[in-house]
Image (cartoon, rainbow, N blue to C red):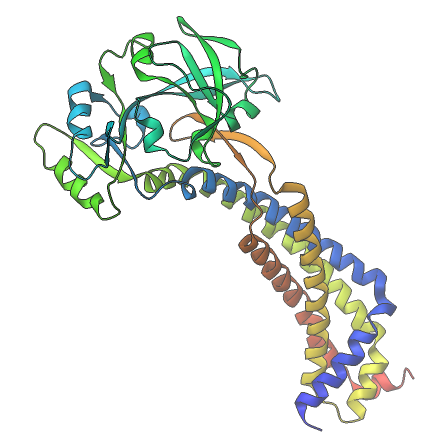
Length: 395
């Protein structure tokens, strides 16, 4: 009998006998499922944060900041500089003029809905072209603010996370009062964590004079990025940096993603060690209960390799079941869960949803299989090395 046929035969016997060891098998499954739930749940935070910050950005949008600034908070552009940037080649034009919006970005304190504690909420002053730069934005409740007034519109995610930001509410920040007149949807992007108002009204409210912090523009074509960048960086009147919006927000999210993934993987590794010990005990118990069966197979001429493979296949099967259960529980518990966290680059709150993505579920399942294989390796070697004569005496 060939080794391959022996493997199939011994593995079939092993799998049919799992029902006799349901108790110990369930322990291994539950342990691995728990690890996968934690692993997937924690990393879904990083996935959701990354999606909100960068993956939903438009590749045709570019952000212009003062040279050397890595965030809008540390940037500054004069009114004349903003005018030069808006008129630069490479920026899309419409009947209403260049599709570019000089903008202000300030932080205001406002309580979170769940805890009541104050959070740093981003208040953005936008220009009339802002909605042409961001065509995906739509008002879903109320209306757009009127230029020249102390009116604001609130991102859908901000309305969910921050207390009292509903249409008709008046809020006060600094020396000014603002009336909420609308709620907007931005396709789940980071913009939904912001409050928007007229930049010309925000400038005197925060004593900014005729200044902005950034210019968000829409390219006339994907190939126009280099044209715009060359024109602005070579202009002696300007000291600016030009980057795609996606790249900017990807860089903004890097620190938080690193923190979350480091913590998540660390917790998963520690829990995984416990799950591996559980799998080892389960498989040792399985080998012990099958001592006579394995010895009989060896006496009939079955080799050691088929025995090793059969034990590893059982461990792998249990880990797959545990991984699938853990992934399903993580998806049911975490996918779409809405929360907010601090973006440490801009020191403002970002509202986002956990995302249990297919790739994350696959990673969780692979991790489960790895735990199962490691946990089954030593018991498999022990099964292969069982002394045939000693084991047969137990018959």
